[in-house]
Image (cartoon, rainbow, N blue to C red):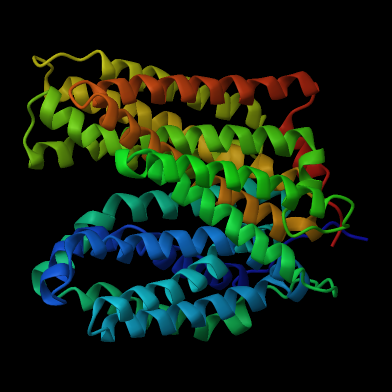
Length: 463
């Protein structure tokens, strides 16, 4: 049989546009609501502390639903799960825009989260069927570029929408995009082979409990009154997680993809990914405090000085994606994380007399390193798995990202609760340490004795 060559043009262009539309909405709605929390609190007459659940409900729902929905993608086909995810996200967006009280808005955000998980759980799996193996890195690089740009412009876009309209418009803007993506997805997205088998409902419920307890437990550690409850939740999550893994062993295509961790390349790519996203969130949460309180910058200056990081991620993501089709992911990702480590240490040692240029080029170095890491590592993670398990790999990739970000946020909160005065600078040193650990994990892949990126393309099984 001929090797799989992906979709023909122009179907490939329309398919990737559909995927990117869904991805932009799912990523944007994970952060854009933050800026509207004060407005939501005022207009819905809600306690400000309770309005945080407008953000938490979405993030928690996405995380607990990723692996079950990626498993459904393997069973039913990735196109079907993606389109249902789009439709669910559309319904959730309509309900968010029409919400008249906080409970209704939070419930609508949960529905949005289910849709967002449907989109993100099979996003990378679809890219694997859209592009031929020799251009998989390019597709994943473009995917990372879209995520980077969305994250970079998210706060500014949210502020612009709120400047000309009220908070419901933050959700209403999704409606035409989702309708457009749904309309073109029917004929554009590839039909992927379904694998008829029973969906593991008990494991899906147990995985939701495990990840929910983990996220709430990690978050609780950062708040002194909740620290004991958070630690208890983490212990229970570990115990139930162990039971969940035992339940998955021996199954041909488990809901929690423990079978994929038999691949050393996949395992090391997951470890590298967790370290990198934990690093990114440690830095992103700590940097505003560091720039304002330690270096004496204004709120406006802080926003501008952080901008080089996500911009460089967006620029480098596509470049490193193309490079990952030719060079080993272990070297590219490892070199990127070494650059990220150097940038973070450079930021941490700055004094109050540091110029804006001193700060900006270090931010750019961090973004350059993170962008250089992301696409090659994602390509290695996907390329190390059989095509029929692309859904499990895609779900694992998205889950690792969210767990890393959650852990990074919690560590910063914990550091602030222990030592408020020096916590921001210390968080940057911790971030640099985690990034260096990720670099070591990535470079350890060189012991396999073969280029992880180029061989994965050659090893793609026929369609």
